[in-house]
Image 1 (cartoon, rainbow, N blue to C red):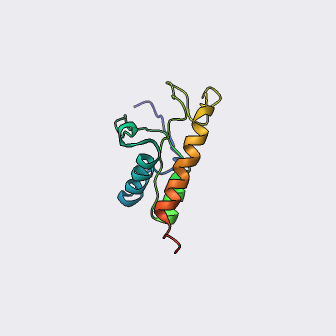
Image 2 (cartoon, one colour):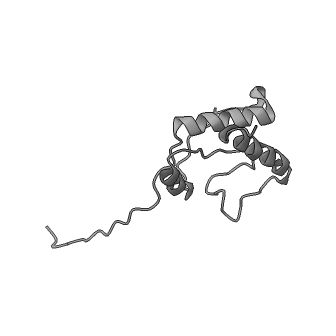
Length: 110
C-alpha cells in the first residue's frame, strides 16, 4: 500500500541443549552420590539460555548439561555475564561430582 519492501537475513545461532536420557540419568546418579538423594533436585524452571555445550552434545551423542549450584542467575543475567556471582564454596563439591561422573561412566579397572 505504501510501496515498502523488506529483506530479512536470519542467521541460525545455537541449537537447544537437550540432555539425552542416558546422560541425564548418569549425571543424576553422580549428583546423588555426591550430595545425597535428599539434596538432589530437578525441580526448577526450564532455561531458554543458549550454551555452546549443545554442539558438544550433538558431537558425542550422549552426556548431560547439569547445574551444580554455582550461584543464582537473576533476570537479565547469565552464567557467563559480568553480573553473575560465582559461589566459590561449590568448587570442592563440583570436583567430587565430576569424579563421580567419571567413576560411573568409565568401566572399573580390575
